[in-house]
Length: 401
RNA sequence: GCGUAGGUGGUAGAGUGGUCAAUUACAACAGACUGUAAAUCUGUCGCCCAUUGGGCUACACAGGUUCGAAUCCUGUCCUACGCA
Image 1 (cartoon, rainbow, N blue to C red):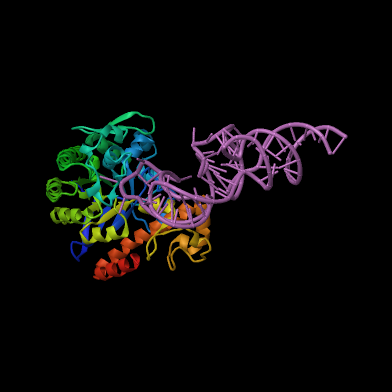
Image 2 (image 1 turned 60 degrees about the vertical axis):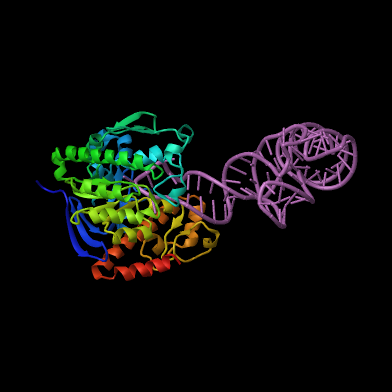
Protein backbone atom coordinates (compact mmCIF):
# COMPACT_ATOMS: atom_id res chain seq x y z
CA UNK A 1 0.00 0.00 0.00
CA UNK A 2 1.21 3.45 -0.95
CA UNK A 3 2.24 5.72 1.89
CA UNK A 4 0.94 9.28 1.90
CA UNK A 5 4.09 10.76 3.43
CA UNK A 6 7.75 9.86 3.69
CA UNK A 7 9.85 11.00 6.62
CA UNK A 8 13.60 11.14 6.23
CA UNK A 9 15.95 12.07 9.06
CA UNK A 10 18.99 13.99 7.86
CA UNK A 11 20.84 14.55 11.09
CA UNK A 12 20.43 13.58 14.74
CA UNK A 13 21.39 15.21 18.02
CA UNK A 14 21.97 16.81 20.37
CA UNK A 15 19.72 14.92 22.74
CA UNK A 16 16.72 13.55 20.91
CA UNK A 17 16.76 16.36 18.36
CA UNK A 18 16.68 15.59 14.66
CA UNK A 19 16.50 17.49 11.40
CA UNK A 20 14.68 15.93 8.50
CA UNK A 21 12.11 16.20 5.75
CA UNK A 22 8.50 15.08 5.58
CA UNK A 23 7.51 14.59 1.94
CA UNK A 24 3.80 15.20 1.50
CA UNK A 25 1.60 15.12 -1.60
CA UNK A 26 1.80 18.93 -1.64
CA UNK A 27 5.51 19.34 -1.08
CA UNK A 28 8.14 18.92 1.59
CA UNK A 29 8.10 20.04 5.22
CA UNK A 30 11.66 20.71 6.33
CA UNK A 31 11.83 19.81 9.98
CA UNK A 32 11.97 21.04 12.60
CA UNK A 33 9.21 23.24 11.22
CA UNK A 34 6.68 25.66 12.59
CA UNK A 35 3.17 25.19 11.15
CA UNK A 36 0.95 28.25 10.90
CA UNK A 37 -2.55 27.95 12.31
CA UNK A 38 -5.39 28.87 10.00
CA UNK A 39 -8.32 27.52 11.98
CA UNK A 40 -11.12 28.36 9.60
CA UNK A 41 -9.05 27.82 6.48
CA UNK A 42 -7.67 31.32 6.84
CA UNK A 43 -4.67 32.63 8.70
CA UNK A 44 -6.18 35.63 10.43
CA UNK A 45 -5.24 38.81 8.69
CA UNK A 46 -2.82 37.29 6.19
CA UNK A 47 -3.07 36.34 2.54
CA UNK A 48 -1.29 33.22 1.36
CA UNK A 49 1.20 35.42 -0.48
CA UNK A 50 2.12 37.11 2.79
CA UNK A 51 2.49 33.70 4.40
CA UNK A 52 4.81 32.44 1.69
CA UNK A 53 6.81 35.63 1.84
CA UNK A 54 7.16 35.19 5.59
CA UNK A 55 8.58 31.72 4.94
CA UNK A 56 5.65 29.58 6.08
CA UNK A 57 5.71 26.08 4.63
CA UNK A 58 2.56 24.47 6.09
CA UNK A 59 -0.86 25.54 7.34
CA UNK A 60 -3.04 23.77 9.91
CA UNK A 61 -6.82 24.18 9.87
CA UNK A 62 -9.48 22.88 12.22
CA UNK A 63 -12.04 20.16 11.61
CA UNK A 64 -14.58 21.33 14.18
CA UNK A 65 -14.67 24.91 12.94
CA UNK A 66 -14.82 24.00 9.27
CA UNK A 67 -17.48 21.37 9.89
CA UNK A 68 -19.61 24.01 11.64
CA UNK A 69 -18.88 26.58 8.98
CA UNK A 70 -19.01 26.41 6.01
CA UNK A 71 -19.77 22.67 6.34
CA UNK A 72 -18.69 19.61 4.42
CA UNK A 73 -20.86 20.11 1.36
CA UNK A 74 -19.54 23.58 0.67
CA UNK A 75 -15.96 22.56 1.34
CA UNK A 76 -16.39 19.75 -1.16
CA UNK A 77 -17.98 22.14 -3.65
CA UNK A 78 -15.06 24.53 -3.30
CA UNK A 79 -12.62 21.73 -3.97
CA UNK A 80 -11.25 21.11 -0.51
CA UNK A 81 -8.94 22.97 1.83
CA UNK A 82 -5.93 23.63 -0.39
CA UNK A 83 -8.02 24.70 -3.33
CA UNK A 84 -10.44 26.92 -1.48
CA UNK A 85 -7.81 28.80 0.46
CA UNK A 86 -5.43 28.91 -2.49
CA UNK A 87 -2.62 27.38 -0.47
CA UNK A 88 -0.40 25.19 -2.60
CA UNK A 89 1.84 23.86 0.15
CA UNK A 90 1.29 21.10 2.71
CA UNK A 91 -1.67 21.29 5.07
CA UNK A 92 -2.84 19.66 8.27
CA UNK A 93 -6.15 19.54 10.09
CA UNK A 94 -6.65 19.13 13.79
CA UNK A 95 -9.36 16.62 14.63
CA UNK A 96 -11.57 18.73 16.88
CA UNK A 97 -10.10 17.03 19.93
CA UNK A 98 -8.84 20.31 21.29
CA UNK A 99 -12.38 21.71 21.19
CA UNK A 100 -13.48 18.87 23.47
CA UNK A 101 -11.29 20.68 25.96
CA UNK A 102 -11.54 24.35 25.01
CA UNK A 103 -15.33 24.25 24.68
CA UNK A 104 -15.70 21.72 27.50
CA UNK A 105 -13.63 21.79 30.66
CA UNK A 106 -11.80 24.90 29.52
CA UNK A 107 -14.92 26.83 28.61
CA UNK A 108 -15.55 29.84 30.81
CA UNK A 109 -12.56 29.03 32.99
CA UNK A 110 -9.09 30.47 33.16
CA UNK A 111 -7.61 27.10 32.20
CA UNK A 112 -6.01 27.18 28.78
CA UNK A 113 -3.24 25.40 26.91
CA UNK A 114 -0.38 26.40 29.20
CA UNK A 115 -0.75 27.30 32.85
CA UNK A 116 1.51 28.92 35.36
CA UNK A 117 0.59 27.00 38.46
CA UNK A 118 -1.54 23.93 37.99
CA UNK A 119 -1.00 22.76 41.55
CA UNK A 120 -3.11 25.64 42.87
CA UNK A 121 -6.09 24.84 40.65
CA UNK A 122 -9.08 23.30 42.34
CA UNK A 123 -9.68 19.84 40.92
CA UNK A 124 -12.73 19.72 38.72
CA UNK A 125 -14.42 17.06 40.81
CA UNK A 126 -14.20 19.23 43.87
CA UNK A 127 -15.73 22.28 42.31
CA UNK A 128 -19.31 23.36 42.32
CA UNK A 129 -19.86 22.30 38.73
CA UNK A 130 -23.19 24.05 38.35
CA UNK A 131 -21.68 27.43 39.04
CA UNK A 132 -18.65 26.95 36.89
CA UNK A 133 -19.84 26.84 33.33
CA UNK A 134 -22.49 26.61 30.72
CA UNK A 135 -21.57 23.30 29.16
CA UNK A 136 -20.96 23.20 25.47
CA UNK A 137 -19.55 19.66 25.37
CA UNK A 138 -20.76 16.32 26.69
CA UNK A 139 -18.34 13.44 26.37
CA UNK A 140 -19.38 9.81 26.30
CA UNK A 141 -17.98 6.45 25.29
CA UNK A 142 -18.38 6.97 21.57
CA UNK A 143 -17.66 10.63 21.08
CA UNK A 144 -18.44 14.18 22.08
CA UNK A 145 -21.61 16.20 21.69
CA UNK A 146 -20.87 19.83 20.86
CA UNK A 147 -23.42 22.52 21.33
CA UNK A 148 -22.66 25.03 18.62
CA UNK A 149 -21.96 28.54 19.89
CA UNK A 150 -23.19 29.69 16.48
CA UNK A 151 -26.77 28.48 16.68
CA UNK A 152 -27.08 26.21 19.73
CA UNK A 153 -27.47 23.09 17.62
CA UNK A 154 -25.95 19.93 19.03
CA UNK A 155 -23.43 18.08 16.85
CA UNK A 156 -22.22 14.68 17.85
CA UNK A 157 -18.66 13.94 16.72
CA UNK A 158 -17.29 10.41 16.83
CA UNK A 159 -13.83 9.32 15.72
CA UNK A 160 -15.36 8.08 12.47
CA UNK A 161 -17.13 11.39 11.88
CA UNK A 162 -13.96 13.31 12.53
CA UNK A 163 -12.14 11.16 9.98
CA UNK A 164 -14.93 11.54 7.47
CA UNK A 165 -14.90 15.31 7.81
CA UNK A 166 -11.11 15.45 7.60
CA UNK A 167 -11.24 13.32 4.46
CA UNK A 168 -13.58 15.85 2.91
CA UNK A 169 -11.40 18.76 3.97
CA UNK A 170 -8.49 16.91 2.42
CA UNK A 171 -5.37 18.00 4.33
CA UNK A 172 -2.12 16.09 3.81
CA UNK A 173 -1.82 15.25 7.48
CA UNK A 174 -4.85 14.68 9.68
CA UNK A 175 -5.16 13.84 13.36
CA UNK A 176 -7.01 11.13 15.26
CA UNK A 177 -9.95 12.32 17.34
CA UNK A 178 -8.73 12.64 20.92
CA UNK A 179 -9.77 14.12 24.23
CA UNK A 180 -7.50 16.90 25.38
CA UNK A 181 -8.00 16.95 29.15
CA UNK A 182 -7.71 19.77 31.63
CA UNK A 183 -4.80 19.50 34.06
CA UNK A 184 -7.36 20.26 36.75
CA UNK A 185 -8.89 16.80 36.30
CA UNK A 186 -8.12 14.07 38.81
CA UNK A 187 -5.76 11.29 37.87
CA UNK A 188 -8.64 8.91 37.81
CA UNK A 189 -10.35 11.04 35.22
CA UNK A 190 -7.11 11.32 33.21
CA UNK A 191 -7.00 7.55 33.25
CA UNK A 192 -10.55 7.21 31.93
CA UNK A 193 -10.02 9.91 29.33
CA UNK A 194 -6.80 8.28 28.19
CA UNK A 195 -8.48 4.92 27.68
CA UNK A 196 -11.13 6.71 25.69
CA UNK A 197 -8.53 8.54 23.60
CA UNK A 198 -6.85 5.22 22.84
CA UNK A 199 -10.11 3.59 21.81
CA UNK A 200 -10.86 6.60 19.65
CA UNK A 201 -7.37 6.44 18.15
CA UNK A 202 -7.93 2.85 17.12
CA UNK A 203 -11.32 3.66 15.65
CA UNK A 204 -9.90 6.68 13.82
CA UNK A 205 -7.17 4.52 12.36
CA UNK A 206 -9.47 1.65 11.38
CA UNK A 207 -11.89 3.95 9.67
CA UNK A 208 -9.12 5.83 7.91
CA UNK A 209 -7.38 2.70 6.66
CA UNK A 210 -10.64 1.37 5.31
CA UNK A 211 -10.73 4.22 2.79
CA UNK A 212 -8.55 4.58 -0.30
CA UNK A 213 -7.89 8.18 0.65
CA UNK A 214 -5.55 6.93 3.36
CA UNK A 215 -2.99 6.60 0.57
CA UNK A 216 -3.12 10.35 0.11
CA UNK A 217 -3.69 11.64 3.61
CA UNK A 218 -1.46 10.72 6.53
CA UNK A 219 -3.02 10.07 9.93
CA UNK A 220 -1.27 11.00 13.17
CA UNK A 221 -2.36 9.50 16.49
CA UNK A 222 -2.45 11.82 19.48
CA UNK A 223 -0.68 11.00 22.75
CA UNK A 224 -2.32 12.24 25.95
CA UNK A 225 -1.87 11.35 29.62
CA UNK A 226 -1.74 14.68 31.40
CA UNK A 227 1.22 15.25 33.67
CA UNK A 228 1.70 11.62 34.70
CA UNK A 229 4.73 9.68 33.60
CA UNK A 230 3.02 6.30 33.68
CA UNK A 231 0.06 7.55 31.65
CA UNK A 232 2.22 9.42 29.15
CA UNK A 233 4.43 6.41 28.52
CA UNK A 234 1.52 4.05 28.37
CA UNK A 235 -0.12 6.36 25.86
CA UNK A 236 3.00 6.54 23.72
CA UNK A 237 3.25 2.75 23.76
CA UNK A 238 -0.39 2.25 22.94
CA UNK A 239 -0.20 4.58 19.96
CA UNK A 240 3.19 3.35 18.82
CA UNK A 241 1.70 -0.12 18.51
CA UNK A 242 -0.85 1.16 16.01
CA UNK A 243 0.00 1.83 12.39
CA UNK A 244 -0.09 5.61 12.41
CA UNK A 245 1.93 7.66 9.92
CA UNK A 246 3.13 9.90 12.72
CA UNK A 247 2.14 11.24 16.11
CA UNK A 248 0.81 14.29 17.82
CA UNK A 249 1.56 15.13 21.42
CA UNK A 250 -1.36 16.85 23.05
CA UNK A 251 -2.53 18.13 26.37
CA UNK A 252 -2.94 21.21 28.48
CA UNK A 253 0.20 21.65 30.47
CA UNK A 254 1.62 23.30 33.49
CA UNK A 255 4.60 25.25 32.17
CA UNK A 256 6.82 22.96 34.23
CA UNK A 257 5.27 19.75 32.91
CA UNK A 258 5.75 20.37 29.21
CA UNK A 259 9.39 19.38 29.22
CA UNK A 260 8.97 16.10 31.07
CA UNK A 261 5.83 15.06 29.24
CA UNK A 262 7.48 15.51 25.85
CA UNK A 263 10.60 13.66 26.88
CA UNK A 264 8.74 10.68 28.35
CA UNK A 265 6.68 10.35 25.20
CA UNK A 266 9.47 10.69 22.66
CA UNK A 267 11.62 8.15 24.45
CA UNK A 268 8.91 5.64 23.61
CA UNK A 269 7.61 6.70 20.18
CA UNK A 270 9.34 5.10 17.16
CA UNK A 271 12.17 7.27 15.95
CA UNK A 272 11.37 6.83 12.29
CA UNK A 273 8.00 8.55 12.37
CA UNK A 274 7.40 12.30 12.62
CA UNK A 275 6.18 13.86 15.86
CA UNK A 276 4.07 16.96 16.07
CA UNK A 277 3.84 18.94 19.29
CA UNK A 278 0.32 20.28 19.28
CA UNK A 279 -0.33 23.92 20.09
CA UNK A 280 3.12 24.84 21.28
CA UNK A 281 4.96 27.84 19.99
CA UNK A 282 6.69 30.22 22.39
CA UNK A 283 10.42 30.40 21.62
CA UNK A 284 11.56 28.72 24.86
CA UNK A 285 9.06 25.91 24.34
CA UNK A 286 10.12 25.38 20.73
CA UNK A 287 13.75 24.86 21.77
CA UNK A 288 12.56 22.46 24.39
CA UNK A 289 10.41 20.59 21.91
CA UNK A 290 13.17 20.34 19.33
CA UNK A 291 15.82 19.05 21.69
CA UNK A 292 13.35 16.51 23.01
CA UNK A 293 12.63 15.08 19.61
CA UNK A 294 9.64 16.92 18.17
CA UNK A 295 9.65 17.68 14.45
CA UNK A 296 6.74 20.01 13.88
CA UNK A 297 4.82 22.56 15.94
CA UNK A 298 1.77 24.70 15.53
CA UNK A 299 0.58 27.59 17.61
CA UNK A 300 -1.80 30.51 17.41
CA UNK A 301 0.63 32.74 19.30
CA UNK A 302 2.25 34.52 16.33
CA UNK A 303 -1.06 35.61 14.86
CA UNK A 304 -3.01 36.13 18.06
CA UNK A 305 -0.25 38.08 19.75
CA UNK A 306 0.37 40.06 16.59
CA UNK A 307 -3.30 40.89 16.25
CA UNK A 308 -3.26 42.11 19.83
CA UNK A 309 -0.15 44.22 19.30
CA UNK A 310 2.57 42.08 20.87
CA UNK A 311 5.59 41.38 18.66
CA UNK A 312 8.62 39.16 19.05
CA UNK A 313 12.13 40.55 19.03
CA UNK A 314 15.46 38.85 19.77
CA UNK A 315 15.40 40.79 23.06
CA UNK A 316 11.98 39.50 24.06
CA UNK A 317 8.40 40.43 23.31
CA UNK A 318 7.29 44.05 23.19
CA UNK A 319 3.87 45.64 23.02
CA UNK A 320 3.89 47.93 20.02
CA UNK A 321 1.16 50.18 21.39
CA UNK A 322 3.23 51.22 24.40
CA UNK A 323 3.86 54.92 24.76
CA UNK A 324 7.60 54.50 24.30
CA UNK A 325 7.24 53.30 20.71
CA UNK A 326 5.07 56.11 19.45
CA UNK A 327 8.05 58.18 18.32
CA UNK A 328 10.41 55.29 17.64
CA UNK A 329 11.52 55.50 14.01
CA UNK A 330 13.30 52.13 14.05
CA UNK A 331 11.65 49.00 12.63
CA UNK A 332 10.16 46.44 15.04
CA UNK A 333 13.43 44.55 14.78
CA UNK A 334 16.63 45.93 13.29
CA UNK A 335 17.83 43.83 10.39
CA UNK A 336 14.66 41.73 10.21
CA UNK A 337 13.81 40.63 6.67
CA UNK A 338 10.04 40.63 7.05
CA UNK A 339 7.79 42.91 5.06
CA UNK A 340 6.76 44.92 8.13
CA UNK A 341 10.31 45.61 9.23
CA UNK A 342 11.58 46.37 5.74
CA UNK A 343 8.78 48.86 5.16
CA UNK A 344 7.62 50.48 8.38
CA UNK A 345 8.71 52.03 11.67
CA UNK A 346 7.56 51.16 15.15
CA UNK A 347 6.07 54.64 15.33
CA UNK A 348 3.87 54.00 12.30
CA UNK A 349 2.80 50.54 13.43
CA UNK A 350 2.08 51.89 16.91
CA UNK A 351 -0.13 54.50 15.29
CA UNK A 352 -1.94 51.85 13.24
CA UNK A 353 -2.46 49.76 16.35
CA UNK A 354 -3.76 52.63 18.41
CA UNK A 355 -6.06 53.88 15.70
CA UNK A 356 -7.44 50.38 15.08
CA UNK A 357 -6.39 50.28 11.47
CA UNK A 358 -6.45 46.65 10.39
CA UNK A 359 -3.06 47.05 8.76
CA UNK A 360 -1.60 47.17 12.28
CA UNK A 361 -2.58 43.61 13.27
CA UNK A 362 -1.59 42.45 9.79
CA UNK A 363 1.91 43.88 9.99
CA UNK A 364 2.44 42.57 13.53
CA UNK A 365 1.20 39.13 12.45
CA UNK A 366 3.50 39.14 9.42
CA UNK A 367 6.45 39.96 11.63
CA UNK A 368 5.58 37.34 14.24
CA UNK A 369 5.03 34.62 11.66
CA UNK A 370 8.34 35.49 10.04
CA UNK A 371 10.08 35.59 13.41
CA UNK A 372 8.84 32.23 14.67
CA UNK A 373 9.00 30.38 11.35
CA UNK A 374 12.57 31.56 10.88
CA UNK A 375 13.52 30.86 14.46
CA UNK A 376 12.62 27.21 13.90
CA UNK A 377 14.36 27.24 10.50
CA UNK A 378 17.46 28.53 12.26
CA UNK A 379 17.17 25.68 14.73
CA UNK A 380 17.08 23.30 11.78
CA UNK A 381 20.17 24.90 10.24
CA UNK A 382 21.94 24.74 13.58
CA UNK A 383 21.07 21.06 13.92
CA UNK A 384 22.42 20.34 10.44
CA UNK A 385 25.61 22.21 11.25
CA UNK A 386 25.98 20.75 14.69
CA UNK A 387 25.71 24.12 16.45
CA UNK A 388 22.28 23.76 18.02
CA UNK A 389 23.37 24.06 21.63
CA UNK A 390 25.34 27.25 21.01
CA UNK A 391 22.50 28.68 18.98
CA UNK A 392 20.04 27.94 21.75
CA UNK A 393 22.24 29.37 24.48
CA UNK A 394 22.90 32.57 22.54
CA UNK A 395 19.30 33.06 21.55
CA UNK A 396 17.82 32.48 24.98
CA UNK A 397 20.42 34.66 26.71
CA UNK A 398 19.38 37.61 24.56
CA UNK A 399 15.70 36.75 24.48
CA UNK A 400 15.36 36.52 28.24
CA UNK A 401 17.45 39.67 28.65
C1' G B 1 -31.87 93.22 23.53
C1' C B 2 -35.94 89.51 24.61
C1' G B 3 -37.31 84.28 25.01
C1' U B 4 -36.07 79.13 25.58
C1' A B 5 -32.68 75.22 26.70
C1' G B 6 -28.22 74.33 28.83
C1' G B 7 -23.09 74.63 31.27
C1' U B 8 -20.67 67.55 35.07
C1' G B 9 -13.94 64.54 35.31
C1' G B 10 -9.19 64.34 28.59
C1' U B 11 -14.02 63.80 25.31
C1' A B 12 -19.22 62.39 24.78
C1' G B 13 -22.85 61.90 28.11
C1' A B 14 -25.76 59.78 32.88
C1' G B 15 -27.12 61.61 37.52
C1' U B 16 -31.55 65.96 39.57
C1' G B 17 -31.42 66.88 47.99
C1' G B 18 -28.10 62.08 51.46
C1' U B 19 -26.30 55.18 49.33
C1' C B 20 -21.58 60.60 44.50
C1' A B 21 -14.99 61.29 43.73
C1' A B 22 -19.82 60.91 40.67
C1' U B 23 -23.22 55.14 35.95
C1' U B 24 -21.54 54.25 31.02
C1' A B 25 -18.77 54.65 26.55
C1' C B 26 -14.56 56.46 24.22
C1' A B 27 -9.61 58.19 24.95
C1' A B 28 -5.17 57.44 27.98
C1' C B 29 -1.70 54.05 30.65
C1' A B 30 -0.29 49.08 31.70
C1' G B 31 -0.99 43.71 31.60
C1' A B 32 -2.61 38.89 29.63
C1' C B 33 -2.83 35.67 25.41
C1' U B 34 0.65 28.54 23.58
C1' G B 35 -3.83 21.98 18.58
C1' U B 36 -8.16 30.25 17.87
C1' A B 37 -15.53 30.74 22.17
C1' A B 38 -10.15 35.79 21.00
C1' A B 39 -9.24 42.40 15.56
C1' U B 40 -10.28 39.59 22.49
C1' C B 41 -10.01 39.95 27.72
C1' U B 42 -8.22 42.22 32.50
C1' G B 43 -6.50 46.19 35.64
C1' U B 44 -5.68 51.55 36.60
C1' C B 45 -7.80 56.08 35.30
C1' G B 46 -9.20 63.93 40.75
C1' C B 47 -4.94 64.80 44.48
C1' C B 48 -2.19 62.90 49.02
C1' C B 49 -0.98 59.01 52.43
C1' A B 50 -2.56 53.68 53.80
C1' U B 51 -3.14 46.80 53.91
C1' U B 52 -8.67 46.97 54.81
C1' G B 53 -8.90 52.40 55.05
C1' G B 54 -8.38 57.62 55.73
C1' G B 55 -7.71 62.89 54.45
C1' C B 56 -8.25 66.89 50.91
C1' U B 57 -10.20 69.55 46.64
C1' A B 58 -14.16 69.01 43.08
C1' C B 59 -19.95 68.85 38.86
C1' A B 60 -19.08 77.27 35.00
C1' C B 61 -18.32 81.43 38.89
C1' A B 62 -20.16 84.00 43.46
C1' G B 63 -23.55 83.96 47.21
C1' G B 64 -27.80 81.59 49.68
C1' U B 65 -31.49 77.68 51.64
C1' U B 66 -30.58 72.94 54.32
C1' C B 67 -28.28 68.68 59.49
C1' G B 68 -26.67 67.64 54.31
C1' A B 69 -26.23 70.46 47.48
C1' A B 70 -23.58 68.19 41.14
C1' U B 71 -28.84 68.19 42.37
C1' C B 72 -33.16 73.71 45.26
C1' C B 73 -32.94 79.53 45.17
C1' U B 74 -30.55 84.39 43.58
C1' G B 75 -27.03 86.91 40.76
C1' U B 76 -22.90 86.89 37.22
C1' C B 77 -20.40 84.90 33.04
C1' C B 78 -20.58 81.66 28.89
C1' U B 79 -22.95 78.39 24.91
C1' A B 80 -26.88 76.82 21.47
C1' C B 81 -31.44 77.73 19.15
C1' G B 82 -35.65 81.07 18.22
C1' C B 83 -37.50 86.19 17.92
C1' A B 84 -36.06 91.15 17.25
